[in-house]
Length: 350
Image (cartoon, rainbow, N blue to C red; front, top):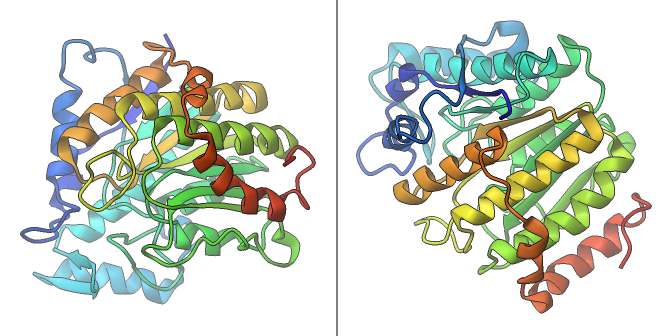
């Protein structure tokens, strides 16, 4: 078994988004209940959640914006944007989400853990330097990546984002930075409207953003084939010191906000593929953080499948999964991506 850590804290439930909002405390409640299943108890190590410090938040977010989020702690209700509501407990929950991920990264980087999953909320990958967006207050994965570089002295970070929605905030945080490679698969065109395949970074970061926009209907085999083709080609060339994953479960078949068909086994396969890449590139150092996922049964079962894969309790054959893909759909998605990105990565061939 691997030493797999979990960030888990009841204070994440204090971020209240209002009746009917899909990003509700119930998302974590079903996951935390799952951790008490007989086949999960005692298998994972607790990572203590801590509040992110101001200097850590300011690695990504402007001080005025951090102060704006902090001010919501004094308000019974606040609406930061049309999708993002807050309650008095939201600011602290957001601090704990970013800080909890940083703590998990620290424990993995030091070797205390092999890998970890930050089961936190609110999510983060839509949050920009100066504003909230799409249920997100602070960009947890972006803060975590910069923390790994500044506090832990890691040099190159690979961020993988399999959420249904494109991580606009993460992309914009690093699009001029060649030390952070951002790879995203996402339903397109869809919220937030970014993530076209020709968005490949800017200036010195040219080529270090790789977007794979997808139409509706992609499932286990197609995702496995796309990840195998792109990530297995570019990750060794980039040679990351750490892999971070924005793990959104809204690509689950049946998610109310999505149009994909990934199953719990599919999530396990993607996790195994990423773990294999990490073993070959960075001594297995992988940390996931929870993003979307709004079908509660699918969220529960899929997170369980991912955790079992991280801990070595299962070993899913993603290569066999990829063989079951609709090859025409895979080719349709990959053709424009390869045409654009083969200019930057030697391993990417038609």
